[in-house]
Length: 284
Ligand SMILES: NC(=O)c1ccc[n+]([C@@H]2O[C@H](COP(=O)([O-])OP(=O)(O)OC[C@H]3O[C@@H](n4cnc5c(N)ncnc54)[C@H](O)[C@@H]3O)[C@@H](O)[C@H]2O)c1
Image 1 (spheres, protein in one colour):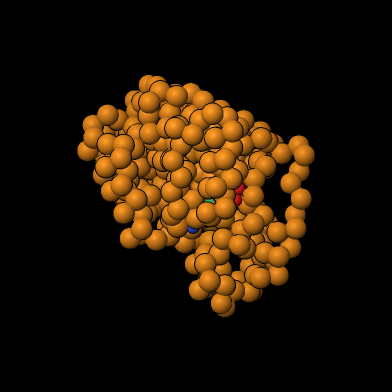
Image 2 (image 1 turned 60 degrees about the vertical axis):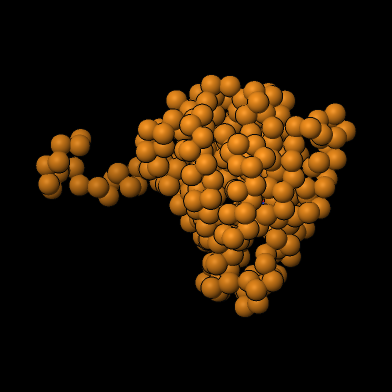
């Protein structure tokens, strides 16, 4: 189902100019794809394109400035992809931010920022890009970046982030069968600790959502958080994603470190569920 080779495919990767998105782009390019790095940050795009140029891969990448929250801009970029590439084959809804802070102090601005980028950014990607992926008839693949944070109990300070990623995980699971009918595969990436620039989240917050935020201090603290030496390399995640696309794997999970907490949550939910059926639907 979906695509069987990455060679000569066009991959549109949001947040593709840094961290995990860039790792995915590098691996897809190494395996013969053309990567479109769609990113909010011009400085990230410039740096990423310079890396590809240094590797002699200038022709294999295109940089596009895009805020995934901006639906009109997304529609324009989508039309441009049809014109330049005959439509994209692989859509990677990866752009994300990591807002964290005292949840009981959180304001609408904090929720709108976290859900706006992490959930609506994915929704906007689907609405903008799926029509061309269905119309060109070549089949394709969608990868949505969620997080292992969506699968475990998290500290309260991660409530907005984890809720946003739970939405991405859930929508990916439930859209999969309908996409399969169009020969489009669906994977959801659940990473944990990976080397990236997500500590720059505060810099990626739009001006109008800075006003009224209660988390300026938390975002300042996050900006100073060092990157762990033992965190995963983005290219390692990229390899898992490339393999996952080709295998049309629903879940792409990077770390085994949260198996216990994942099980605890699952078992608590099962323990709260009646043993007996109420409606006799025959699903068990
Ligand atoms: N790094 C981790 O440990 C980790 C763990 C779990 C999930 N994730 C998820 O992986 C994804 C990538 O994050 P990362 O860690 O590589 O961070 P990153 O900050 O290095 O990369 C994210 C990129 O997205 C871009 N971006 C931010 N807001 C955007 C917007 N509105 N429109 C377009 N681009 C935007 C940023 O400019 C940046 O280049 C995110 O969805 C994140 O939640 C990361």
